[in-house]
Image (cartoon, rainbow over the protein chains, first blue to last red):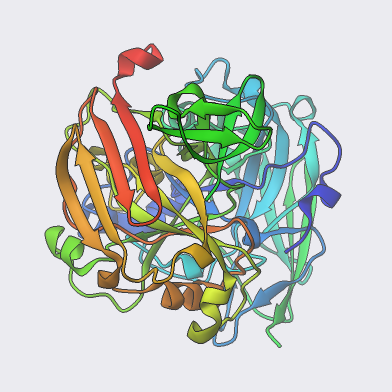
Length: 226
Length: 255
């Protein structure tokens, strides 16, 4: 576990440690499931935002190694735009949603690959170090349009995947509106907007760099467990 | 046992104190003695990661028509959902089935990573009562149980007391009881946990490092019933006290 306060010590960008991920919010990720979304056990596509939690043991920083657990052939890189809350957000309207943001951060929502989204075990997403964030929080005012940011994933220096936040099903303002209808987000909380499909695999010994327009790059080496 | 309460402009530690009229009160560390309802009760410790168990009592799993599991059904909750003793929990107007869940909460006191069953209880600081509400109308079949069902503001009640592990001789033989509007609706005993406390700590610490303040809500037995605005919901566990909570409607929140 890394001390996030060291990486994000400049107020008002102190992170609370609460990081929420959003499932299937990129059109490509829903399309990848095809008609399975209408079949058991799901029966229909997600209606309200489906969130999950990356607990504090997963939080990590730019430059830290991600450990590939023993018995795991590869992991999945979950490149996301992360929203950093600046002001308590409860029942916000789309028109005012962005006023509640301090800024943006790159999130690598690392997972052990799984193809069942009904009730996956938390051990697939909540392992130590499985959520690098960084390299810093970019202030909201420095990002002109968060709904049109290119996201690129490089593995060992070569481009493996690219996506754009314009492909998100719920935009930044809409996701904040729909999430804060049922739960308040507090200053320093991070809400990750969702991963595009296909999420590239990464193996121990490889290096991952996620670049988002205007936010810089988040780099992490993946290493085998010793 | 100790509580965290807000009183007269500050947050205090408090312990139980019988009042001169014989009723239950509290004493702040600065000596002030107060009635239970004179203070605002907060969750009784600094809460870290909230780890919750689904279907961890055989009878409740049967009640919800689930078959036996190979692995604990674990989900996580965020800090915004927490409230303390004597708080209010909102029932949305459009909900048809909202229910409480009385649970034994196990508070970690010492970093736990890859610990064995035998060592597990050495990492427990203490216990408290949890009431882990769900609004079943919002359950979707994606990453169950989704946060809209289980992680609503005010939907996780913790308290009233943090009780040191040393004060609970046998955590695997505690009776749980829930009363709704004065009527007993739920009973159970922690001896019926499918995955017991040592198992859960060993299991969780095999892939996530647990640190002081992390809390495991160990699941609820059968007997969950619908609650309505105005209901007082009281969860009791042997040796841990009585956790009181009131259901309120949307109107209280200006909705």
